[in-house]
Image 1: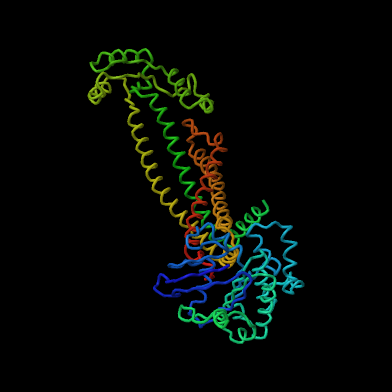
Image 2: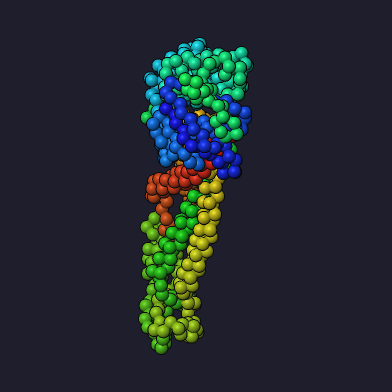
Length: 227
Length: 302
């Protein structure tokens, strides 16, 4: 599903974000990416979403080679990815329903489809009664669930979550990751960047640790080595 | 179609949210179109005036009012005797009035109705041509020295003045139009930039869920083009109003057949609206591509 081979990334200002990173994520996996800030976690996600291009190496997502991908093909690549952000990124002047519908609208979904799909997704995240609320009327945890609903509504193959629990109460963080696990059980690949150790410890998932631009630990490799 | 109406609505909403900037854009583009239109109309009218003058492209010798027609014809014989005079045709008061009616055109001829017969103030005259125009001054002096001759009227001088005026107006107009069009492009681009910046959250979400760049562009293109269309429509209306105010207050239409703006108003409005829309689109495109390449290229919100 996601494959990085010898990927390096240097930003134009000279910052070396990633060195020779190799990572393979299979379809249906749930992976935590951990590391201190500035380690290169976000750069990793940006390479997968094609927001940044690597200096060299091989990068394949969904069987598509991202090294030579044309700019105009990037939007279609992203339609298979749901992005969840630390700051939720909900549009304040739109209701919960409209925020979720917006994601469908801008990729060309019809109104009838939207009316059917959005309530279903809101039910999935247990916010079916809050469709008419504005983001400001919701708690942080609820807002992030809306963010998750928006990421899910176009039925992506994978969810890329960048510190999704960074702005919400620790108690509610578990709720979010629970939801992600549930989504994962339905077959969606999950990549979640975090630095909350309690979450990582609690949910026994694959953990990839990045330090100073290199992958320094990968629980999957450990398991494979033990076998 | 649903999406298009949605995008259209978004574009129009931008204009309202951003009304001060939008208004400034409309005002500058409008001035640009207005100056263009005014210069063209001025030039056009000058050309009409010129063609009338050129129709009289000869030298006229006016006979004093108190000289009777018979005596005037004798003066003509004296003129014909001069070396440098090639032709010399008599134009009676009545002929002069007929020519005058022709010159002001059918519409305005009624203005001269009361001036026939005894009320005709035109003098008897001769239209002459010279063999050698380089000797114009000496010949002219000889003609004026003949008793009974009032003065020589040479339309060439008027034609030169008109041409000179036309050149100045065209050049000054061109400079103003170029400056104003650059300013309007700059202001439209800035307006669109502000609109995009105020919608950066929406844009970042659109990018993150895979909206195409065209989908993101259309509302802003609509915004720019609406500004342009508004400027074009208002400018053509204002041009019409100003043109007829000037033409009638200065009594210009009584002197000669001015450009009939009423008759060409429909194509003028269409042309102004199209030019306005093109300017609006160009201004937006400049801003949009700059934005999407720089800050908008990333999903991150500033």
